[in-house]
Amino acid sequence: EMDVSSVLLKLGINDTKVERKAAEYVRMSRVKLPNLLQGEPARMVACVELACKVNGVDFPKAAGMKRSGVQPPIYVKTLSALEKELKVRIAPTMKELALQFGTVRILETLSQSFKRFQVEFMSTLSDVQRARVDMKDPIYTAAVFFLVSKRHKLAVDQKQLLARMNLGAQEFKKVCDIVENVSPSICKLSKAKRKAHEEEKKRKRGEVEVGGDGAESLSEDEGVERRTKESKRDGQREEKDEAKRIVSSMLQLPSRN
Image (cartoon, rainbow, N blue to C red; front, side, top):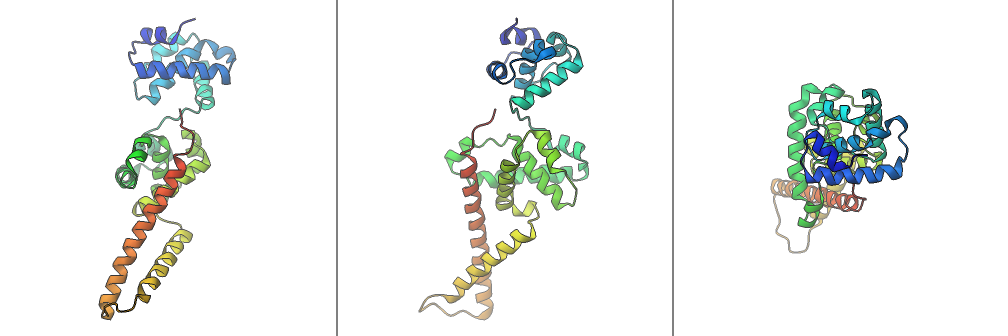
């Protein structure tokens, strides 16, 4: 039986990260799927293809299928079984998602929204958290794609999206919460969340209005302006604090791949 290095050599792939990841997938797959039946001969090549995908390295599909030793339909079925069992998450591009879910007309908006979220999100994190967050993780792409599409009233089947990207519903919801808190301008908040935000802002305004003894008296217009600015500042601070709380919770989740 060929080993991973032999498969890589025959396919003309020279990448140490791919080699390490493929070897890891082979070991894990033998534990989780000890018998692939007709697809057993394709295990090694399929693991190499998955390793290439997660590392962004081109995989010679035709040559790979030929080297797998099985018919194309069996190879595709084996690859899919391994991807699912190993919980391999491969991030499609916004363009690929837009084509699949019929949202091509807002493709530019989707791309720009993701870039904006990435900048705003990273600015809320500490240096330690930044080092642990991988923005290439498909869950961030999925969350921005779903929320921006929803804002533009384009129906995206959430279950289908999660299945397409091999994501869990609970973790997906956490990341959607992050996007809504960090970049509320790119996604339309639900009525309940908008109401909660407004109530919190009113509460903050009430605290400002009470003031302390000896505070300088302001004209009505100046008071309104001041309250508006302070309310906006408080709202932004609350959104960042909430984002940090959610991120801290997320970073405690097991690492993927």
